Amino acid sequence: MTRKRVLIIDDDARNIFALTATLRAKGFDCLSCLNAQDALHLLQTDEVVDAILIDMMMPDMDGYEAIPRIKNIDSRRQLPIIAVTAQAMVGDREKCLQAGATDYVAKPIDVDRLLSLLPRS
Image (cartoon, rainbow, N blue to C red; front, top):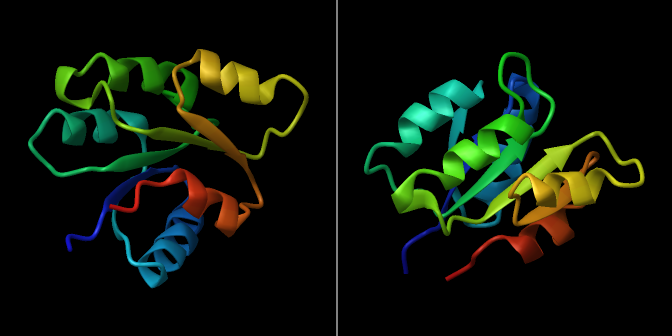
């Protein structure tokens, strides 16, 4: 059985480290990018990615701008994209979904909820 690969896009290396450690312990492989532009370049290659976790609040290009651009890449159109944000106000989930996210998790991340959203097989 092949391990699923998750691309983590976050401008905070500590968040990438924590998510990577958690996901690897649960049987996932992880890739990471510190900004959305690097992620877009990676996603235009043949790199295997089964799901994306994207921080919604990043400098230069935030998740609200990046998600539609990811969805415009033909080979990535159906890729699950989970918005990760510290913004947990009323309406934030809907705003993430309107941007094209498959689902939404708030920080601090509930690992069990996150795992339920990721593809397993």
